[in-house]
Every structure is written in structure tokens, then in C-alpha cells.
Image (cartoon, rainbow, N blue to C red; front, side, top):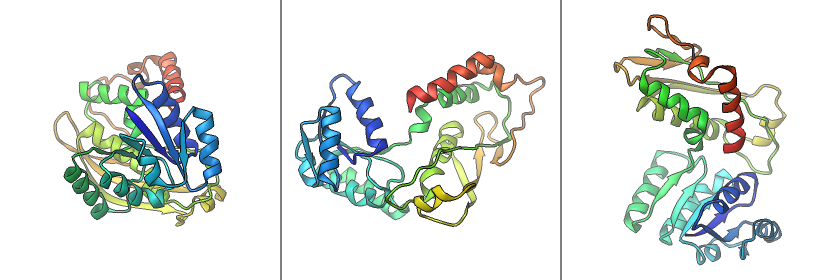
Length: 257
């Protein structure tokens, strides 16, 4: 498969390393607004073609991964689909439901795939949790607290902390429980610039979701606790293999990232 990567930042590097490790995958082009940075990225990963024009990169590709700044994801994904290219777009793929529906419709018309990089559900620790939940090892789950910590870095482009990062737990809950119903969300401080967020000491985002369990279809809430009503429930640490198992899972995050 001939693959083009759009963007040349940290996330693009992760995708490039993973793609090069896959048999049958060849990264044939990289594109970005600065040709010099695209050239450096191409040199690092042995990519033959680099350009500052998306249309030029698509000439060399059967599939594309969009790793550019969030503000151009929808525009670039649309261009890739119109060109008949299978497209994987990083979070967030667009700015709202209408744009998401447009991408899905366009992909169907062109008979190509459009996917969003919901990578968290494929990390080993979260896969293990999904298996435990579906097997009923945790008992009847009523509430779940999900806290995501980031080492924030400054960027030259703006982003929405809620739209971008809250997509990870939202997708995980869909994967774990089948469906969710959004109830409320908030970001503090109320900023959209990643540069400003990086300068805040304690930026926070919170979403309140209602989910259905796989066990008895009773409702639960993503809130601030995990409650189980199974007699003598097994501890999550034991299910994950004790201290050693948890340490292995932490290592998995590093390997999977």
C-alpha cells in the first residue's frame, strides 16, 4: 500500500514509525505548509517525495494519514476523499456533526474509507479493561471516573482541548459500553488556544456521560467513582495481574504510543 502522510509533527512521526513497521506499507510522500520541514521529515523516514501541496502528495498515494493542525482536518479530509483516497484523519476530524456526516457521505460516494484515529481503544491497557468489562470480571459497573493527564507543550496553532482530548474517553466508553448519552461538558480555563492552555498550571476539561452496561443494560454515569454491586468483587489490580501486571501495562503505554 502506498501511503502519504500529511503533516510532519510529533503525531506524524508516530504514524510514520508504525507504518514503516508494517509489511507491505510504503510511505511514498509527505506534505506540509513548510517545504523545508517536509524535506527533513522525508529524510528521517526515507520518503521519496515531499511537497507543500496536498494535491501533489495524493498523486503518489493509495491511502493517507492526516496529522496536520486540527483547523485544517476537515478541509484536507474532504480533498483526499474527493481524490478517491482512503483517509485516516487524526482527532478531531472536523468541527461538528454536519461536517462528520458530509465526510461519511463523500466517502460512500467515492467508495473509499474514512476513519478517525481513535487510538486509545487499541492500547493494550484499554483492551485489557474492555475484555474484563465484557467478561463481567468487574461486576455491575455503575460509575466510572476517567482522568487523563498530559504533559502539555506549546504549539504554533490553536486547538480545542475539549473537542480534541475529550474524544478519547468518549470513544473508549462507546467501545466499553456500546453507547453513551452526553449530559454536560465544561473546560476550565475557557480557552481554545493550545499555546494558552500550555501556560496554565491546572487546565481541566470534564464531560458527564450516561452509558449502558453490557451486563444488565442498567444506566450508569461517567462521574467521580467506580461502584460495583457484586458480592466480594475482585479488585481491578488483581484482574490486571497485581503490581507486576500494572507495571507491564504502564510499559505498554510507552510501546504503543
